Image (tube, rainbow, N blue to C red; front, side, top):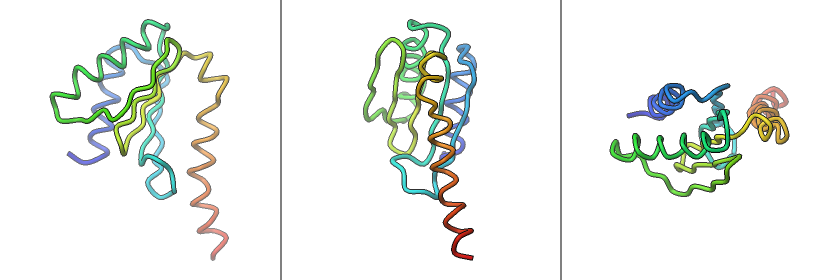
Length: 117
């Protein structure tokens, strides 16, 4: 299964369990620790942990590796090597503005190509 299919499966599982504001960042062409980053909002602290547990339960039998999971009630980060998943409360997501950071990283490659023309 290719990377995009794997990400789609993650999105599907999160969506089925009521995760909100799902967003995927493709960082394949820039220097970053993962090729894709998935962001999702949880409805509550318990929902954050439940979503992470659900992903492990559904994806491990399909061969997905969970290299590291850093979890708290408000924010769970799942490292799958080439995919990073952030599941967080909307308050944490607003506070840390990961979308801005990831968009900026993604745009750096575009700016480098543009500057070299």
